[in-house]
Length: 264
Image (cartoon, rainbow, N blue to C red; front, side, top):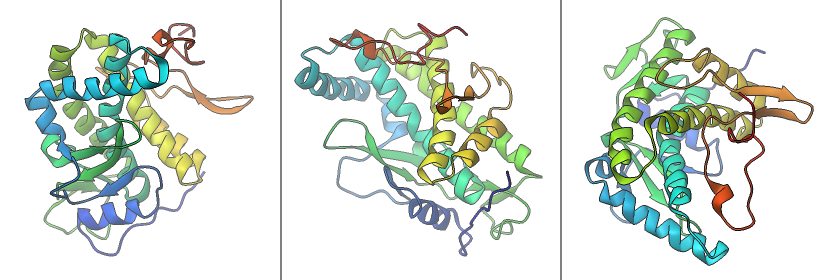
């Protein structure tokens, strides 16, 4: 299916962030970092892993209010998935709406935790450099790196995302007992889900599925699989590569697509 990609008239990455932000609803998206409001750069967590402990403590309090318990693996799994959503979502949103890829450096991404639950409800892309296609209106921008086509842009997105995750995994492994295979599986889930989700929230699920197939066209190690999206009788769904450990909460069971119960 051919899709129409809208690009912003101004050429800089901040203009792309503003354009993409105007077309999505659930997570606030911006190109600057407010001085107040509890914002954290991703690099601050990777440099000081005690920040993950603080985050998990907040989550544990939230879970105990609702379930009476907060299993260690559950808090580890939730924070793992929520952190990985930040670079995955930033990459997916700009890829989908602008056909641009930011560098995704940990120092150039920030997020804020929500008041209703301690998950990232706002993301900031703070860098200025980006990759784009030859027909991008900002191709001549000194901050732009032009690539040949969409396949090359998808390869750049994978590489930049993997580079970020490769810094996250050794840091988070210090704070939890989750293994590298679990962490890379969660990173694969986060990217596949983000590309799909951006299409769904924009009212064009087919475009999200197509982008996931473009970026995750095969297994690109250390990611653990190609896109796992598939069409079922009930619509598009995907088999998870990682477990969120929600089943450890009272009266909860495995998700329908959990790898614990779904054949690979």
